[in-house]
Image (cartoon, rainbow, N blue to C red; front, side, top):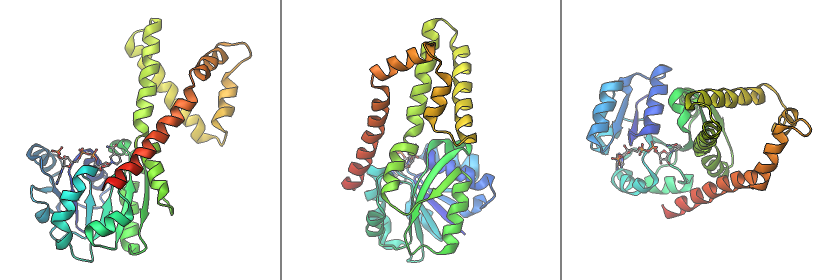
Length: 268
Ligand SMILES: NC(=O)c1ccc[n+]([C@@H]2O[C@H](COP(=O)([O-])OP(=O)(O)OC[C@H]3O[C@@H](n4cnc5c(N)ncnc54)[C@H](OP(=O)(O)O)[C@@H]3O)[C@@H](O)[C@H]2O)c1
């Protein structure tokens, strides 16, 4: 199987790393079309893959093309490639907001897979949600599942709107988590402990709390209850959080990202 990436940025690199580390393919099976010469040089040196400034050369002999440019660059890519891709090729798109229908029309192909990964894929701890069209063969579907497993966890869904929701929840999600962590660390510093100590306390607290949820079937609120003793410090903190509409703000944050994902899709 030969695959090519159009756009050799952060997410493409995470996928290349996963594919090579899991030995799903060798570097000789991977080519990349990338406009930045600096990026091409880096990817060639680091992963020994072939890179091209001309996307047409990159897709030559590919069974699968992975579309990994930013949403605003899709049109320029599809205009150049769409008449030059054999009908047997499958497109895997990780582009936020771009629907299966848009992709089918833009590339004039029927075998399309829409994938929404996230940046922890860079360390094999990603969460990827994906959806193929009915025309994707079992062989390509199984291959895609193996590639996505090499990035962390993957879930194939049936409803395309779940992809837009996953864009807002799991794909943008690391940003919310990093912000939350950063705020906790700052709070520790504000109260007087050194930043590196605050960082250690917060990271282990977040990691341990996630692990507790993963290991149990309890609702998160049940675990909140268990740390909240009557008249104690945690309930005092929770009151402040609720007064600041903390939970509503987090929900609104995700909803804003979802709406943006729909808007981006409509612009293409
Ligand atoms: N990052 C995330 O957390 C995340 C999560 C899920 C999905 N995604 C999706 O993944 C896609 C890629 O995101 P990313 O974060 O990997 O972006 P990125 O790091 O900016 O990578 C895109 C790469 O494509 C290059 N490029 C631009 N136009 C091109 C063209 N016409 N032909 C070939 N290469 C071109 C860019 O070069 P220049 O920088 O020189 O323009 C850049 O190196 C996006 O559509 C995004 O929606 C991202």
